[in-house]
Image 1: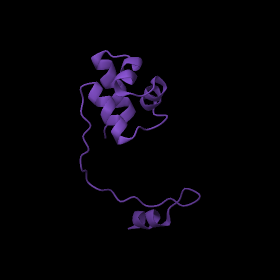
Image 2 (image 1 turned 120 degrees about the horizontal axis):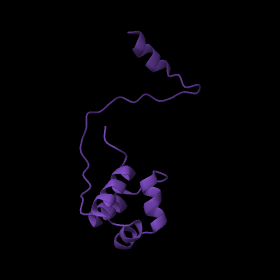
Image 3 (image 1 turned 60 degrees about the vertical axis):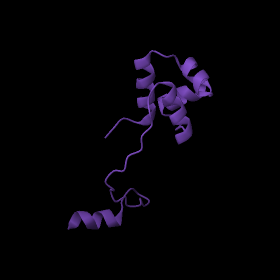
Image 4 (image 1 turned 30 degrees about the horizontal axis):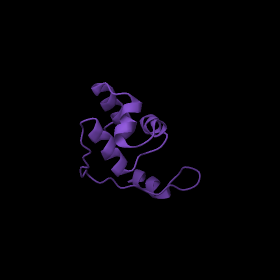
Length: 88
């Protein structure tokens, strides 16, 4: 599993030696937004992520992966469907 997008954005920025202020200026966004994306406080839209990564010389790629069934959670943290799967 790959690192969260914000961590990847911070790593890319650090690799190219660019400050948060410079990325914000080039990507037409605020320094506080860049910081929030990198810390994982908020997630950028795909358009914003692409703009930021492009400024850093990277490309945003979305790849198809194997689908994993996600079962809905129920109150109390137990999922009856998941329990049934476990019993088989």
